[in-house]
Image (cartoon, rainbow, N blue to C red; front, side):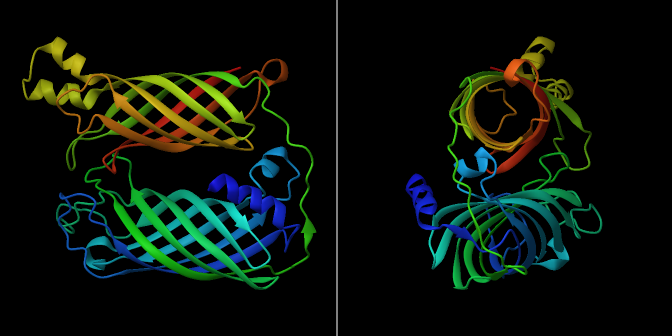
Length: 364
């Protein structure tokens, strides 16, 4: 369905209404009780507002043509959460990428992905806010996935209707960290202040150069096990193989070795097993598959993995990862070596375990 929409988008729209635009949206949403451990009542609705500025890509670069001219932008987001005495207000900034599934002269169907940082005015505190067992820190990561339609009554003015999922958590750095998930509907508008239609560039899209790739990376995450507890490092080493399906996409399979000091220290203090067993339970290999969408020098990574060794403190055999990689420069002949840095959120059953900050290298 997505592939068909992309073909339609390329075939039916010849011109963009303008290079720069602004938009404003209102959200009405409902907090999701995604874990039975959530204590506060989640009654009522959340009201949110966002203002965005975006740039319509023209196809000057090959990746823009292959992704059918996405919009790149930034968003300022404010949400008045339910139970404001417990959850307070969310104020956030996100970078966004908007991919079009179907485009016509009447309406555009799209999916928009966003991620960034959020400030929460009322997080958990042992004295001032003990009932908030959902968010334990003031500064958090936030992410959004949004499906919608832009209707075009005028070339320079569009009306937007959409549904969205908003997520907010600190990635397990500070307990509690069950996270906030909000499903919402939105209505808004897009405005092109200097509407000068321009044609999309339609040059030939090249095939991937050397489609096979080997990936090596080392990462570190920070976690804790209980409220106001000590912070522990999680070390991760990953070896993977990737195959490019196009110049903007690659599928990945690999193995990750992880050492979690929090598990080792917990079992040591609880006198569970001997020293060797404690070290072995802290060491966890896993296999994973994933996909990465390449936007210029930024990659958006999504992966799912299965543990090969499951110590007693692990909550699930399966984990999910989502994050971004940045490729600052190329080395070697024709860019066959690519160093990179990244940040990946890892979660079990919709609850974040840690954020992996990593550095690695790709070899083609």
